Amino acid sequence: MAKGDSVKGKPVEITDERARRKTIKLTTGDARAGHLYTPSFLTAPSQLVYISDRSGHQNFYSLGLDDFKSTQLTDSATIYAAGGCCCDATREIFFWRETALVALDVDSLEERVVLDDGYQGGRLAVSADGRFVAFGAASENVPGFGGEFTGRFVLMLVSARGEGAHPVLTAPFVIGRVEFSPRDADTIAYTWAGRWDGIPQRMWVTDATGLEGGPLGSQNPNEIRGGAFFSADGWTLGYHGSRYHIRSTEDGYFVEETAWLVGTMNANGSGDFQYYCPGPTGRCRISSDGTKFISDVGGAFVPEHQSVALINLDDERGVFEPLFFTGAAATRATLPRPQFSPDDSKVVFTIGDDDASDVYLVSL
Image (cartoon, rainbow, N blue to C red; front, side, top):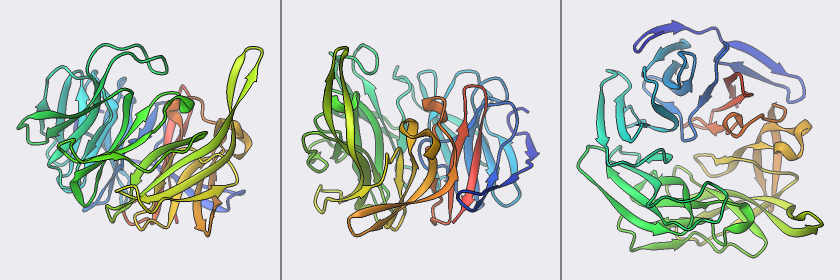
C-alpha cells in the first residue's frame, strides 16, 4: 500500500469464553499495529485512527467502523507515530516527522508543517477545537528516562495554525502525559514521569500562561498516582494508582504495592475520591460520563489475569468486569492501553508482542 490506497479489511470475530464477550479483531497480518495513546476515534464518518509498520515503517491509517475499509494516510520513514494525536473537530492528525510538528487532513491527505524549532518526539495533545497543540520537551540535554535527571523540562503550547509557540512552564522531571480539558483549552492537565517511587507529586494542572494552577490533588506519602484523564464534562478527571511500601533486600530495595485504586477529582484538585480495586489497575481511561473506567488490569504482576476490563465504581470499591483476557504484554509498546469510543459504546485496545500486534474492538 501507498499513501491514499485503501483495502477492505477482514475483521475476525472472537468469543472470549472466560469474559463471555464477543470481540472483533480489526487488523490482521505480520505487522505491528496499534491505536494511538490518545483518543483514536473520529466521527462523521465513524473511523478509528491507528498506526502500523506494514509498509516497513510506522505510518498512520484510518479504518472505517462501518465498512472496515483501511486507508493509508501517510507514507514516510521518519514519523514518530506513537506520539501522534487526532482532532475530531478538524479531522486532523498531528504528529512528529523528525523535528517537524506536522498536521495531516484525514480526508484530503494534505500536510502542513505547524512547527519546526528543533523539538523531538514528545507525546502530543490537541485541544478539542483544534486550535492548540501541547507537548512536553527537554529544555537541555539530560540523562535517559529513569535516571537522576539534572536538566529541566518544558511544557510547550503551539498554535495549530502555525502562528507560533511558547513555553508555558518548566518542571524538574520529564513531562509525560498532557491533556486539554475538552471544554476549555485554557485548562491543561499534565504529569511528571519517572520512577514510580521517585516522583513526590505526579499530577498537575495549569492554564495557558503557566500562571494559574498547581498540584492536581495532594499525593500522599507512599502513594503512587498517574493518568489524569478528563471526562467529557471537562471538569472531572480520572486517575489510577496504588499504595506501597519500600522493602529492603541484600541487593538493594524494591517497591511493594499493597493496594490498588482508581480515583476521580475536579480540575481544581477538589472532590478527590478513591475507589479500591482487587488488583493492579494498569493504564486507565475514564468514561465520558465519569461513571466507570476502562483498564488493562492485572499487568505483568498477574499475567494469568491480564485482561481489558471495565472498572465499575461502587461506593468505595472499583469492581472489575473483564471484557477480554489478553495474557501478559511483551513490551511497553504492545500494552493494551484500552480507551472508550466517544459515546462509551465501544472499547478499542491493542494486543501483541515484539513481532506483531493487532487492534481489537469490543462493544459494550
